[in-house]
Image (cartoon, rainbow, N blue to C red; front, side, top):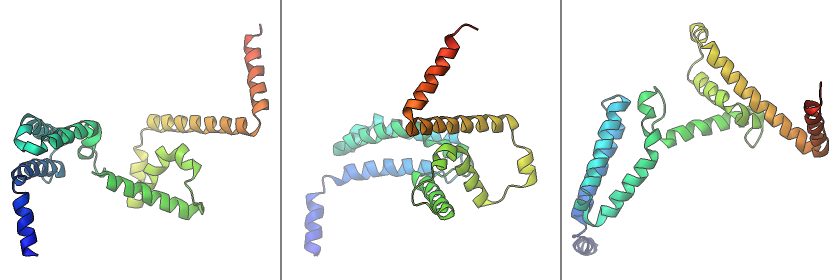
Length: 197
């Protein structure tokens, strides 16, 4: 067994310096994103962008892994717009795994409460409010002062958006049940709009 490992190390010896250099860069980028110092979002973003920029400038030093460094930069650019919100918003999960766990937990509780095996259509229509409310109340019930300082304008805007979605869904249901009657009703309304008063 020992001979096999030694033989493998000898055969791959030329690759190790490139791996060691690239690993240090990736490890440093991960350290910046872990943000153990609890720096603000702008600082984390500035440090991370600097690190990715340095990797791109010195990619040739990674030798055979220079294409991997390019790929890392490309993937990082695609994720960058949403990568730093977790440092600006308190309690926002830092990874998709944490966020997916929240969604999965919500689906589980919804299935338990409704008895449905699939997601409730209401989760799609009202998910913007229901998901946030469910996660927030699982962490602790809101107090009276919390409810009293709600922005009523935002609340009314949210209610209007949710109501528009509900009305659109109702119209689709009416169309599916009786397309001919639905279209005839639309034609009648269009005619009434064009007739003189």
